[in-house]
Each structure stands twice: as structure tokens, then as C-alpha cells.
Amino acid sequence: MTGSFWWRERIFKDFGHSYAVELVFEEKALQKVQIFKNPSWGYFLVLDGIVQFTERDEYIYHETITLLPLGLLSESPEDILIIGGGDGGVLREIQKIPEIKKIVQYEVDKLVFDLSQKYFFKISGDYEDPRVNFIIKDGYLGLKESAEASFDLVIVDCTDPVGPAKTLYTQEFYAEVKRVLKPHGVFIQQASLPVYFPHVLKEAYSNSKEVFPYLKVARAYVPCYGEEIAFLVGALENKPWFTPFKNYHGRYYHPGLNPYYFSLPANWLKLIA
Image (cartoon, rainbow, N blue to C red; front, side, top):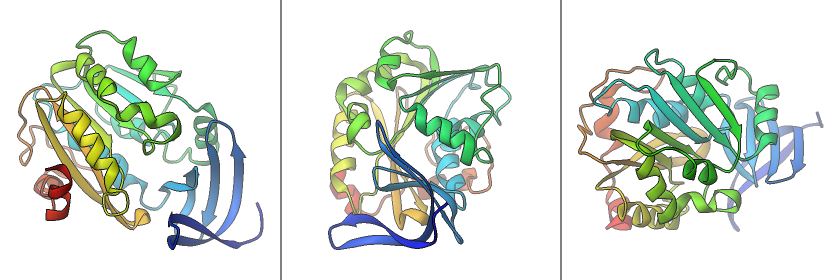
């Protein structure tokens, strides 16, 4: 580790978040990967200059992107597809559901996975689980090779649409997600921070709306992001959005939060109008 210094996550040219950190790891390959340690937030992962998660509050994001859509399934979940999520937090939450029989995960960046297993093993799922088929591959390519109507839930835990994640926000990608979903299935994807990056939600919603007959935007406040993060939630049939079928509970998530998740402020509604 280096000595302590101040590191700034740049949001705009005149605005950012600053952390007193020790640099644990830094390397530029497919993405610029950094791992820092902070006394308040613990270890945290940074990709291309943007904080992905911290040890302190990662569970809010990971429970939202897993338990929220799982609760909307009318049938017991058996087959799950994860695109991205190389830190293992999504897998951890999915593995808590005993009915699940198969988990396929595509991660494009092996470095992110390897570093997460070394530095974030406490928050990661178990990749020795026989239900898990973990594949280093571009998620879009893996998706196109998947069978039709083969997954109950597709989780896209990716970065914002820059670099390798750019194709994961296109109408063509969403059409492939729809193709592999079972009739009762659900899709979820993070869609950035609308207060800071409104174009991400606006464009992703527009593209996915052309594909999914039922589409909602959910929101969750994750402290290290400094704002609410958006999620796209798509389905082929209407869902009980406010009163989920399943009664899942986590450290953060519980079914009573659904009305909050799906109740959007006026400025978000304007973005997707």
C-alpha cells in the first residue's frame, strides 16, 4: 500500500467526491482498475475513475438488483443469468435462494474478477458452487449464444455505457434479453445516477421501451454514490410492482420497500416521458 493521500472521484469538471485513501492496487488493461482503502468506507473498487462499490454499503445495491426482481417472479426461480458482476456480490445474493438450480455468469474483465476474489472475498459469492457456470466472455456475445426462453431472471450488473459496457444499453441487446427470458421472467439493469448523468437513463429507457411490453424504473439511494441510482426493470407480463409475489428479506431490502422503489420524482418522470 501507499501512504495516505486524497483521491477525487470526478463527477463533473467542477464537482467530485473526495476520499482520504491508501492505494491498494492500480492497473490499466481492458479498464483502468483501482482499489483503495478508506477508514470509513473500507476497501472500494474504482473502474475508469468511477466508484463501483464500497465494503460499507455494497449490500444496498446488490440486494436491490437481485431481491427486487426475484420478488416479482410468479414462479419459483430456477435459472439465472448474470451479465457482469465480477465482484461476486450479485452471485452472493442469488445463492441465498435454495430453489435456484442454475446460475450462468458472463464477465468480460478477468482482472476485475481476480482482484475481487483477492480483496473482496468477504462480499463475494461462492464460485465453487456446482450450480454456477462462470465464463470470461463479453456478456452480449454470451447472451446471443443462449437458448430462447431459458432464464427466469437476467441481471445486468455493468458499468455505465462507456467502453466494454456500451453494447449493453442498445436496443439490439435488449431484444436478446427478451428472447432468453421465460414468459414470466424479469430483467434488471443499473442505469446510472439520473441527477448527474440523465442521458444514461433517458437513452436506456427509450431503447428498452421499444422491446419490453412492461417496463419500470426503480431507484435506490446508495450512500457512496451520493445520489439515487436508477434501475431498469423489464418483463413480458405485468407484475405486482408494489406488492411482490415473494417475501424476500435482506439487510436492506424487504417487500415493503417496493412502493418506494417504483415511485419516481417528477424530474425522473420527465426524463422518461
